[in-house]
Image (cartoon, rainbow, N blue to C red; front, side):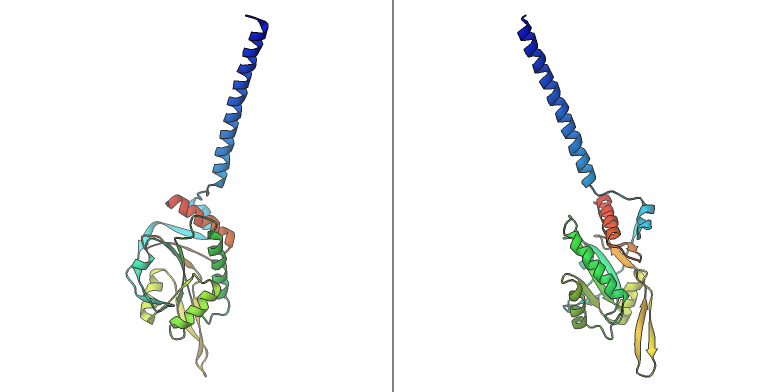
Length: 223
């Protein structure tokens, strides 16, 4: 065999080796980038450290009947097949409610960049049915986000629903002369899973990045 033939075979072998090495490198890079793009699943301690308390066993909810801002009846069945963040407050709230709804709106807008936007609800439940009728709720919640849902109803129905989600509240008279009052209430945000069960809650102070990280982690582990 001539030296030229041997040289050509050696060169061909080198080219094949280089191609195989390059393919291996590309495969490793693709796997690495794909892993980076995946939502990291946090441990329960990491979730709590970032404000999300997720129950190991979700809690079943009993039925309820409330009105949304369009005067439509909503019950437990309307929560199914979607994840729902539920925040309790009242439209005359001076600070906590507007701040919370604002950050939930930011959270909602950021979810549009993920796969979790279409099946996530954001619901504001009034604890002040005497002043918060559906029309008042409509202008209030849609000011923050047109996709938000507002709920109101009879006081006892609201009380039973809030109690199931561990939301404490009480009416506090601020002016006995004219009867003005405020509502002291828990700032937690309840999370309902697609089965209509109480999955856990988020505790203040709220942070957009922590919302995104913990919710994506939960969805990645749940789905």
